[in-house]
Length: 210
Image (spheres, rainbow, N blue to C red):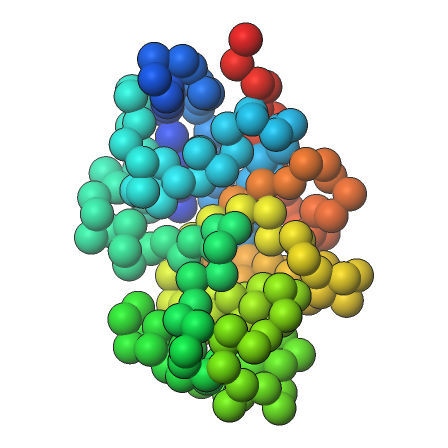
């Protein structure tokens, strides 16, 4: 048995809104080099779960560990990159300015620079385009470039295939594969397994609370 702790582990995790249960209790873990695919219908709590793991919401009960340590705010900031439904971009900055700003806040992956990341996600030539002038799909790709630049080992991806065509879906899968090969881990939410990355995957299905 390996003595290496999971990159992320949750025990007895429960969340309620206005005293109505949203999910839980949940127990799961994800190791370095694998993905956890979180499935469930709308309203089952997938987005809420990722927000709890990212520290944006406080659970009603339960514990969260990252790499064998209690998930403090500082540890979360260093270990987690969160891709939510909103692009988290500054509208009046250019695409590359957004990436440089975010790298200044969160650091960047060794050997990567914003211009290279934009090429990886198919946005070469859009470096000087204002974020507000990008289409929904282009904003999603720019958010993926931000994700790729992050040095965080744990990716929390909420519906990462939304607003992407088949080429974009394949891009997400290639990024997840490369991240896992480098020793990272990913949690992805999706309505179904039709767009799951071809990697070592665990499944977690959330049921809508009665």
